[in-house]
Image 1 (spheres, rainbow, N blue to C red):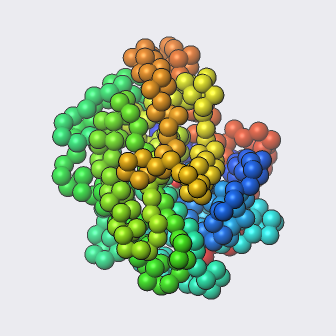
Image 2 (image 1 turned 60 degrees about the vertical axis):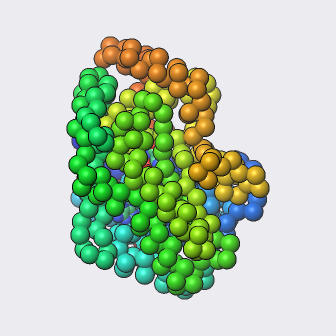
Length: 392
Ligand code: NAD
C-alpha cells in the first residue's frame, strides 16, 4: 500500500515502517557520535520504551552504554490492511539494530499497569538477565485499570480551582484563538493522579524487588515536566501537575524502602504523541522551538537523554534541585529564554504564526513521530505494513 499520513486532530492514525526505522537509526547515530558513557548501566528495563522519551532512554542505554535492554510498551501490531502504531515499528527497528550490534534486546507488548505484564517482565528478567540495574519509568497514558480493584481511571487535562482562559493554537485549522478550560472536579483530580502519579511506578519497583531481580545498586527514574508562567495553569498547577507531584512522593518512598535509588527527572517540552494532546502546549512548544533554535539550545528527546545519563544518572556530580530531581529543563527555563517566549506570546496571530513561531518545525516533528517527512524514505513506494517483530 501507499502509506500517507492520516491526521485526525492531534493524532496521526497510521505510521510508516521505514520512516519509523529511519528515525530510530538517526537517534542511534546521534548516540554513537557522542563520547561513550562511563559507568553506565548494564541491564536496563524501560517501561514505556517505544516512543518519545522512553525510546530515547532505551537507545541511550543500548548504544551509549552497551546495555542489555528489556522494553515494555502498549502498541498496535500491523495487519495486511492497517499499519501498526509508530511505537510498534520503532521497537521492531530498535530490536533489529540492537541485535545486529550484538546487544540483547527483548520486548513485551502489553498493559504495563497490569499485574500480568509485571509478572511476565519478571519472568523474562529471571530467565535472560538475572537482574536489572536501571529501571526507567516513561509511561504516558490517558487511562489505567487498577490491577487490585479492576476499576478504570481516566486522566483529564484541566486547571484546578477556577476556569482558565489562554491563547491556544488549533493545530488542525491553524487558528490562534482563546480556549477556556473548566476546572477539574475533585474526582477528576484524583483519577488523574491514579493514572499519571507514582502509584504504578511504586508497584513496579515493589514487584521487581520482591522477585529479587533488582541489583544492589539499582537506580530508577521517572519523568516529569514543570514549565514556567505560560504553561503553569495547564500543566504545573493543573491536574497533570498534581499527578506529577505524586512522583516526588513515590521517589521518596521507593528510595526509603531500599528497593532502588529513585529520582524524578525534569525534561524539556517537546513534541511527542502525549504532549500534542495537551491544550496550549502546541503553541508554547512552537514558540519555545523558535527561541531555543535561535539561541542554539534546542534539543530533541535523544539529546536530553544523553545529558540525563552523563550529567545526571551516571555523573559523579549530578545537578539535583532541592527536591532531589535531575534537571534537564534548565535551558528551556532560563529567564532570558522564557522572557523572549513571553514577549512573543501575545503577538502571535493567524497571519504571522509561521514567522513568529517555529510551527513548521513543530509540524515536521509531529509527522516524524509517525515516520513521515523523513529524508531518504520513498513515500510514493508500495510498502507492506507488515514488519516482523518478536515481542512477547
Ligand atoms: P509518549 O506518548 O511518546 O510515550 C508513552 C509510552 O508509554 C509509549 O512507549 C507507550 O507505548 C507507553 N504506554 C502507554 N500506555 C501504556 C500501557 N498501558 N502499558 C504499556 N505501555 C504504555 O510520551 P512521552 O512524551 O515520551 O512521555 C513519557 C514521559 O515523559 C511521561 O511521563 C511524560 O509526562 C514525560 N515528559 C514528557 C515531556 C514532553 O514534552 N513530551 C516533557 C517532560 C516529561
